[in-house]
Image (tube, rainbow, N blue to C red; front, side, top):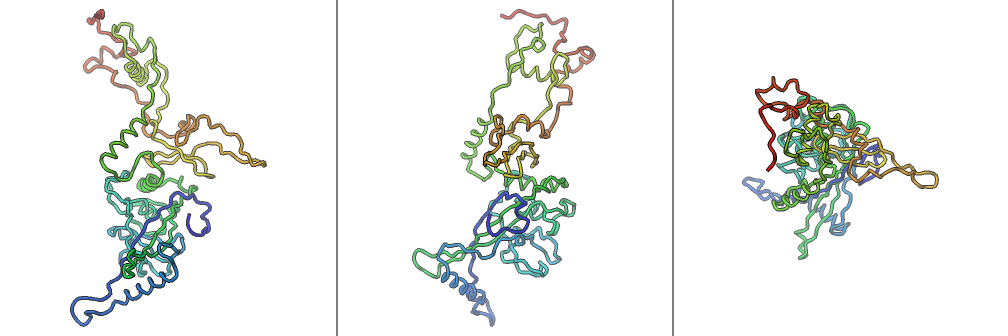
Amino acid sequence: MTGPIIAGEEKRFHLHSFTFQLALVPPISHFGGYGPNTGVVNENRTRFDALLETIKTNFEPFEPFDLIEPTFDYLHIPLDRKGLADTKVPGFNFLLPSKLKRQNVQPLVRNVIYPYTHPSKEWLSSSSAWDTKNWIHASLALDPKEPQTRKANYRSEEQRVFLKSGIKAFWESQEDGDASGDTLSLVLTIDCFVDLQKVWDPLPSLGHDLMGLIYHSLFPSSSKTAPTTESESRADSLRHFYACLRPAPPVPYSRSVQPSNMPSKLLPFQNRTVAWLLQRERAPVTQASEVCKDPAGFWSTHDLEKLGHLAYRRLTGELVKLDREIAVPDRKGKGRAVDHSEEEEGVLRSKDRELLPSLLDLSLVKGSMLCEEMGRSSRYENDKSPLTAQVSARQSKPLP
């Protein structure tokens, strides 16, 4: 966290810090072209040189200093002449706080483009709208004080995401001692805060997707999201594939699964498949199937310090509160004993999975590949289980 503490900041959760460097290009020294203004000295270049000399006198090279103190009122959406959101302009603007109308205020830094925007983005990959370019654009679009970027309603009056930003400056000297090559650079720092008391309030579908873009970009991922070479991507995919492998579930050795009239013995993977299909068909010879849950790896857990434990599903950008105990220090300074026997970092416990919604619950869907053959519905309609139905003309043959 950079800068002083601002009122209300302690109630928000510091989710992410991002810093990138902007190199200032000096203005031209003289105006060119034809006419009476040919060769006229550019006053902006004179001011820039004077500013650079002042900075070089008071600061050492590569020593950053605060140019603007961090606050929550610097980053804004670019505006057109009518004061509406200009979504055709890439990037965002860095403005100093002013009581004037924003369209009449010259921004300090114009059209700051997020440096890590990639065409093959993982979230909302088919959308090319301004507010889905990156998480900074999505945060500004969800700000109720900013102009709307869409005609449809996608946000509420409550602000969920806060961007605290500031600027540091430093100058760079050349190794050969040529003072004319000294440059001035700016370092823009953005701290993202989330009000977890308001993120649980429902949003329209598009607003939920914008919040999902923010979560997807800022919550840590087990796989790489930055573009890499083809060989690195293949190696990372193989490592991730082998990390997802788990032991096979237990084999249901039951007489109901292995028909008595079937001479061939089912292999273990066939046994598991048949048992699962019979459960889907609600066969009376099988036990009731459990409630369908998302596969392992869909959810990850995050401990947000004093705010509690959360579960996050990257596929949908959904956050769910987990009912976990947090160690509370007693008078002697020792924490109360909490059972962590089933808890691993980033892994859900069995009790947690009961609280999480399923993305696609098929537990109430009846029927499967074993239902019946085409054209033979009248023959099997009264059978309790398709596996017990045997064609009378078909005889069992001994194995060779």
